Image (cartoon, rainbow, N blue to C red; front, side, top):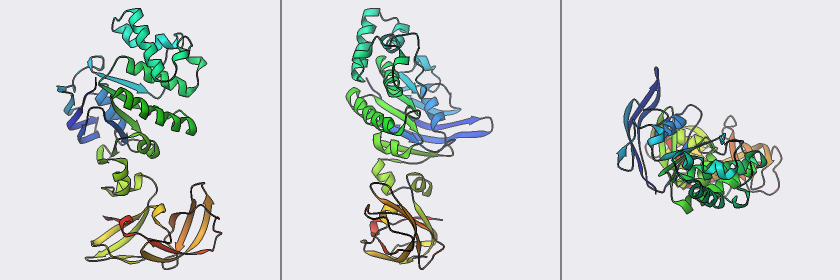
Length: 341
């Protein structure tokens, strides 16, 4: 089973600190949603409200057709996977996965069968008799996921579940989480501060800042067309340039651009948007330094028209340009994003 989630008018305070500010969010049944933002933005508090570990001061928490705002965690159709796995070291993997079913009163044969089914789902069918200390970090994370899914929650909550893994294993687990979610069809709500992780796994990303939702949408839309300056800067690298709109055009240190805007503005340019082939010329820039990153060369450039403005650019992965190299910069019109300053 799976269920939609609807949060309405959600507010919560810790003393005088306003941790969640008028949250309005709808999550479709079977959707994979990530809550993304910096430390202290409210994403973990919001997940705790969904799981019942924090009761909101105001608002509704609808899971399916029921308001769960005042319902205890054990009585909700939710399960939480934590970063620290919380596996019982003295139990086999089979017994760890079946623990929730045991607490629910299910018989040994039935819960063992379900536990082995879930271990097979996460690729550990042959390890059912092992103990957690015999596994790698990624395998222990799979066991924690299998245990959460064994009780068949309508909504699975994941609190930075991959944060303790190294980069290669984290990327592998990102792929596996997505595949497992597609197979079981359960609604997943996943907290992370890692933009790459959010884009790799989510159907929809919810960007949070200071207790508010700044933006929400598909990874592609948020990255390419962010709705706020914060979301633009948080979703990967972004060059931010002070500019002035004159109504029909935008005056920038790089020249006049055909953007309709008035008053002080912030021009945002992704590093990969800066190149030599766009239809809008930005003048010549001098390479300050550059490094090879495999898929691109990451360079810092000083425009000759405004050398105090240092731009970050992702150049083609050929020869690394030495300092002092002059490059003619250009950008495509669709890569220009502007926000009121």
